[in-house]
Length: 88
Image (cartoon, rainbow, N blue to C red; front, side, top):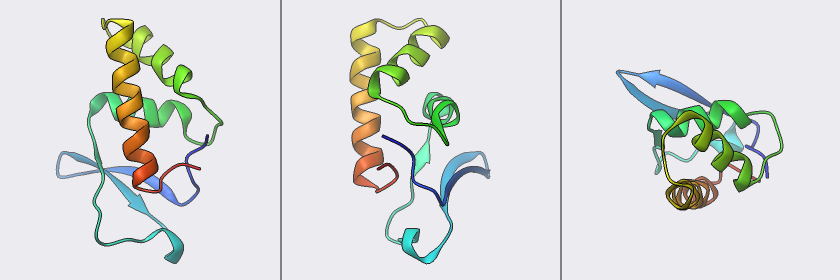
């Protein structure tokens, strides 16, 4: 999968918010915020093809977390990105 073109993360008033560019990406009914680890994952895969395993590997390298927890967190994050239309 890949993050769709036209989206970027910006820090606004201490919150990491995904900003959309272009008419096809704008949906004013949704505001997507990312925590520190989600921003790390976003920045690692922006402009690149990736799989859930790639994101799990990043979490395991950066944080002291059990593999099962990293897998669950990535599945949840990717599901939310898909629901928001951020990945293809």
